[in-house]
Length: 109
Image 1 (cartoon, rainbow, N blue to C red):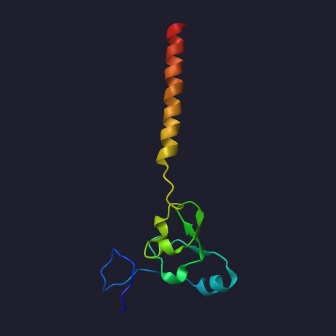
Image 2 (image 1 turned 60 degrees about the vertical axis):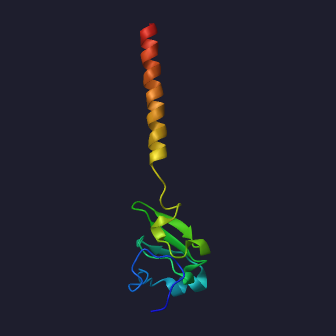
Image 3 (image 1 turned 45 degrees about the horizontal axis):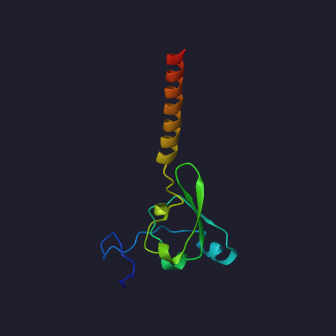
C-alpha cells in the first residue's frame, strides 16, 4: 500500500474508505455532477474539480471538490452540514419576544 499525504482517521493499513462511483468516468468527461448518498466516502485527489450531489437526508446538495477537501469526508462539507440550531434559536427568540410583549400588554390593560 502506498502512503497518502492526507491525515486519515482510519488505520494506515486499511486505507481511505470510498465507494464505487459508476458515473465517475462520465462526470470527468461531461462535467455532470455525481449523485451519491455515501457521505462517509473519503475525498480522493482524483475528485478535485468534480461536482457531487451529496444527499443530506432530505435533498441533494451540490458540492464542488477543491484541493483543501482532499482527505476529508463528503458529508463533512460546510454546505452539506447546515446547522438547524441557528434557525430554531431565532424562531424561539422571536416567539419569546411575542409572548413577553403579550404578557406586558395584558398587564397594562
